[in-house]
Image 1 (cartoon, one colour):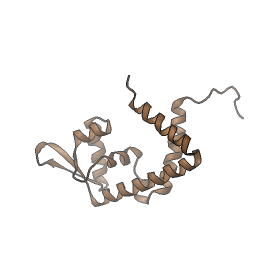
Image 2 (cartoon, helix red, strand yellow):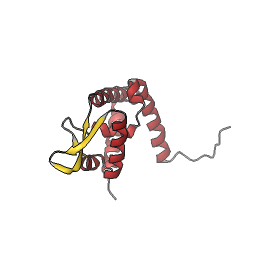
Image 3 (tube, one colour):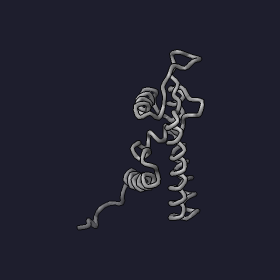
Length: 144
């Protein structure tokens, strides 16, 4: 039975619904190895340059705490996607680098996201898709 008095969904519900659709698309388009990773792991992998990056710098880039990035990096190391080693220029810092399989996951993720975006752009139309991306960019850049 439908509740006719149900209020319109709030923004968190709308974001959750949209993320579920996008994640389902991504899972469909990703090779098996990428489906086992959380979206946050895939996002973090995308920030790691070929030469590697310090945990603290990765945290800044991803907008996370160094402790959270350290935990994510350990998770990714456990599945063979990154290596953690002392930074040769500062032994106190740890350097995160992609393994060969990690680079494959980043390449596959990039292709899957492009395909997913093309699919949703076609569904919504170019104008609506561009407005959505613009609104999300503005919202993400807003402070306080």
